[in-house]
Amino acid sequence: MVLPELPRAGEGWPAAVLLEVGGAPDDADGMPAFRTSLARRDDATVLLWGLGTGRKARALLREGATLEVLALDVDPSRPEDAERIVDACELLTSARRDGRLTLVVGAASHLAARLGARAVPQRMEVDLGALAHVPAPARSLARTVERIHLEQADARRHGPQLRANLATNVAAMAAAPSLHTLAGTAAGRPAFVLAAGPSAAAATSWLSEARRHGPLVAVDTALPLCRAADVPVDCLVSVDPHPASAVHLSHGTGDVGMLAFQPYCAPAIVEAFPRRVLALPRGDQLCDRAARLLDMASLPIAGTVLLYALQIAAVLGCDPIVLVGADFAHVGGRSHAIGTATSRATGPSGLVVADANGEPVPTSHSLLRFLTAVEIHVAASSARHIAIDGGGAAIAGTRRVSHSAFARWLRCRAPAGTATLSLPAPLAPAAIARRRRVWSTLLGEFD
Image (cartoon, rainbow, N blue to C red; front, side):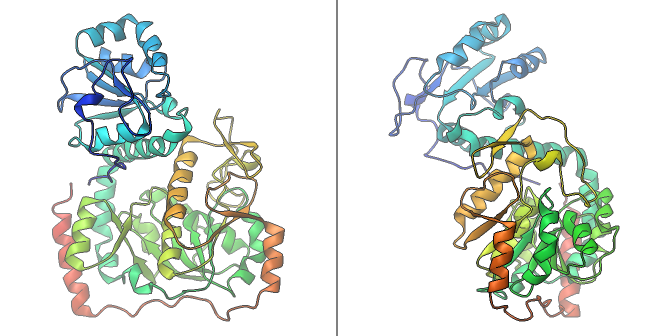
């Protein structure tokens, strides 16, 4: 598998950028991009994102690595801050003198282009603590780097599980219609996208009424809430590869119209639903080949199941798209809504995010990463997005509305009638057989 490219800006690093600290700005926005040494760089060089206190760099140097540190956490207008950290440590200064350490301080656009301009490195490391404290203009890139790093680690750690899931899911994938056969089938109607954040439970009192206006698309972790409140789900969404995640189905799977899954999803979840649609993750090498061979459309990789749910609402043509329980924060000190299988009390993480009033709310690295992915999706969408305010993070590009105000809006709005989604027509036996052959061939080439 391969992972998506980082966003690029410009054509890479021009020769004029290779300056000692103290040089002049090199680009139109006046942001400096300075290199403090010109050590030889090749595929043996480890790219380290984030300087922090230098702790991660020191550990890698002790392992014998040659480093290129992309100091995304250092304000590019203050490169001397990075110099002070290096100068205070004999190991860092000697490594730079010996050509084993290259330190890069610059605008996020230059650092993204630096990575995009080179072949995929043999090794990329991330100082997660450093990337949690980057300047505001670099936050989106920092979350992207963090996501890619963690997905690469997951792929290495769970590769055998992913391959086993894919092999088991071949029959289900071959028979499942493409999600894109549903394109535009709910055009002009609102979609209600239910996440499982701590505030989600407060919406169960009006979600059944909401389904008279438009489809309910729920993440799999929210299924226990819906079952307990007798709220039918039009489309349940799952991307989780771990068999233990079948615990979300412990309250039963009734009243679910269809499952939207992806190829590496846990078979225990896939097999629990007879009605399914499939979307392929774009950016995964194997699935990109399948999309071409089977003429199936694909969606950008969903690092979070909520992003996949939003992508589904977009495919349906819904407008507005209403986010429910998308807190991206530990509201009330909890990870998920009470009643979900994964709900737990959370201790202090040291990380916070601003709510709609600008007040800090406790959060986590992963939730900040998911928030960035959703904000990028919303920014690229032409549909209106409404976020039901449960006290969590402010989501850029959305209009915040309270639970009570939205419930009043529903009562005043004329319903659209039966808003449930119909599953596409089943595939012909010959088409299913062909798809099985293609998937089996690709499985033999699984990387």
